[in-house]
Length: 412
Image (cartoon, rainbow, N blue to C red; front, side):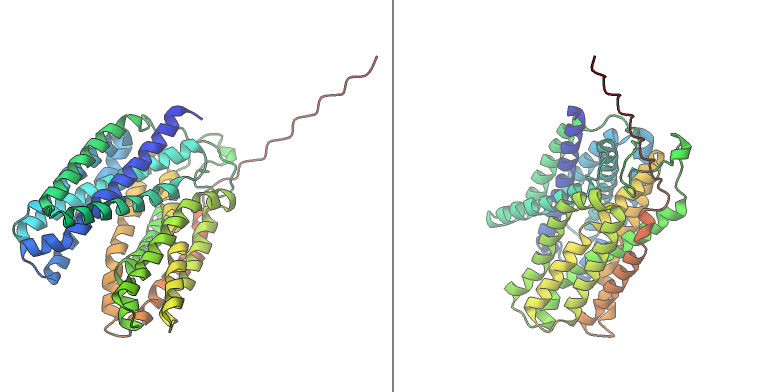
């Protein structure tokens, strides 16, 4: 395999870890920053909306720039911006300053998110096999690194501004050093043998003529991303509270709810590429969403803690491969607009992740918390039923004709 392609894949892993680390360092510092600025939880919740708004805008801007000037320029630039903006929340002294800081940091995070996913699409295309899910798994590795950094800094009495500043500076260095290994140009889309692989965007009859995927299909992928990422948001914010308030678990035991979800999510993403290569991306989405629906239904109806933990584990395992398949399909749908399409799918999906916890919170006014989990179960059933969208618009490569066997030489 080409050394430059392998280096580009490693660099993409680095940027995913970087993104997870920068975001995680901020999340770890939220309580300290909230206390320093002097705001309550309600005000913080309102300010976090600006983080999401900035990320959404950044995704749209970076997607179009990636298509115009290339990911080799946009990815490191976004990494530098995200690293530089990380220190801003730590410097904020009042709610208005924190609002501006979160808007800028969200913008940088959104730019890095979409640009690195777009570059991952190009790497996957050059590899001619699924590799997207593994990239998403390493984002979680960044979260682990951030937790270790946060714990160490807090125990040492380091201020949030210093922690965020050092992490951001290190992120800038990493982003610049990894830039040289990124792919210089968009690879030519290869022909793949997998019948529903996201890279098969040409029909045999077209003989190399690019066929643009209708925008309607992209919006369907975006809607599916919203559903799946909304479910992720529910697990992130409500899994621990479910075990504690509904089943009466201790604080320590309740923490295992999100822990089991995160572990199976990361494990599933490390394995999803192999499953996708063998069975196809539509199968990963269909059976993954179905398994996730079963898992969260078990959580909703479980009277026992151990059973609820098993449900959260199955929920994470089922969801693990769904979003990477959608991002990959969006990027491969039209190589000339890969960044724009990924930004649409990622942007709507990100809004779903932000909206998920709020939707569940509103539904708790009508029913018990565990029963609200039947709503994400319904969304996953819909996702499973429409998984065939990952196969629509892809062509099947004709099987090569067997070469004629050479005639056996006659003995003299």
